[in-house]
Length: 368
Image (tube, rainbow, N blue to C red):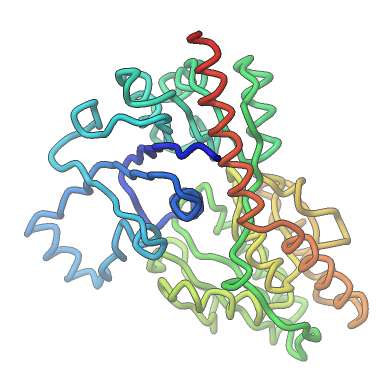
């Protein structure tokens, strides 16, 4: 009989971010397979009355529930209020406790052994995040926590820079019931898409420059976009761009499926889920060489990989996708779909579950 594990995921401040969605998917898988799963994190402080008035005046829309992904997955989240950390008093005893962000890894390292074998789900090299204490982040990678990674880039980082071989490398997938599209022909009017974000890491400034260059060659170019940030004057949308703020999760596929090529100019990604999402919707991609790009994209097959901060290369490769023959575009679309659908979240969930069993078993053998 399979052993049932008690598992605790420690979050920083749960949000609607993609990394939190990945955690919610694994939490749901583990719960559905009989395990006891707890999500514990810090509550986001409510804005002051003064800040609320400012937000209203600026037209800032209400953000979605910070626990949205977990609610959708049927997982309860325990939020610790009026605190800047999670401690032994806030979490149950368990078989394994998993840090999911560098601050939570610091908390995990301080916990009593009764809270579980200490693990670390590393979804990004967070020392590259703006505003973080780089030395503290890197110190968490040196801690004796059992690591699970999501891309070869991060796995290599742990092995080569921090001399710590992760327990498992488990690639992300996408929900193929949520992200899908029927086979289609290239649009009569070329159409590009991108995700809008005001973080410099996402490279939207590079994307916008590339779109200008593409429009010089294709004046009637259609542009679609969505994002969790309201566009502002520092990064204005291209004229005529069809943008939607925070579309419903089940509507996101429609954006990908409208496009002939999806652009991503990120300066850093741990993985880059939108690549897989767009490919699952049969959209070729042009992406910077970050995250899992090299795991997913071969030049000319599913799309193209370009250097970071190179708007000219981004535009050049996008134009290449937009101007190929209908048959060649169809092949690229089919290749993108095949790559995105050869592996699913149940496959990933089974690997994640196996990694947790391995972590617990190895600890038990060490203690004997």
